[in-house]
Length: 153
Length: 115
Image (cartoon, rainbow over all chains, first blue to last red; front, top):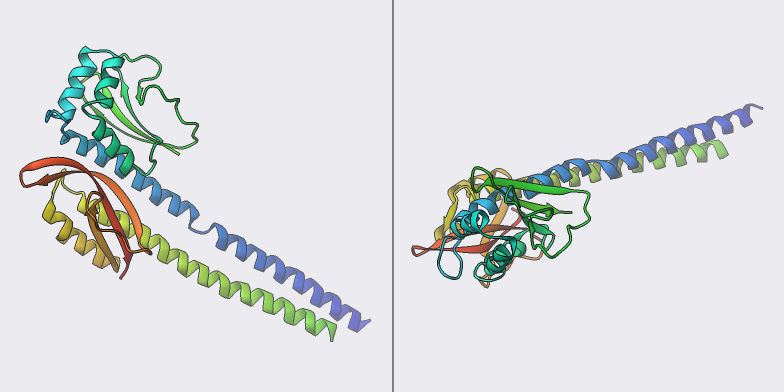
């Protein structure tokens, strides 16, 4: 009987040790994942802010300041003209944004308050990406209009 | 005898998992530090609104940050022919580059690796 009890004790000990080991492995698996996500979040926000700063210094193919031209078009013209500008003289600006963006092609430039309707985000003809996480950075181009860079994940 | 084998199995399982977890912990701390350091270096390089060519080759603030994280780094424009080493972390930024009085928009690459 004593031998049987010792075996049972050992098996229970093994069960407890296995549980403890499983818990440790589980913790090791998830450890730091939330921190890494937070650090990546910082990178995305940094990118958005820096991109908007860089855009202030950008020029289009005509040698005109991109920000000034965009401001004029947002206040005086319609969506088609803005699209024509971003597809035309300023297309390399947009190419640089998507080339450097951590979200790549899932990057959009939105114009809030510009009266562009329900889809005020360039590229206008593409649907908004289905995404659970969106990082945004914005700046006022006029007192009424915000330019927002959105990164979809 | 069976109880001794069960005990030894349990001890072996437990302690090997402890050793494994310590290794994983250390590795993850190192990876997190590298990621955090890389972003800090990027922040130091991008401190100004407009970069000059010289900032790509030598940036005292970024050098200081890199040293404090024990990282090496390299910065270049994607239009240049340089490339990162295979094992480096890579980050890209949109930058306004003042090159001989002419400001242009570029994609800047930041590569970091352990020093």
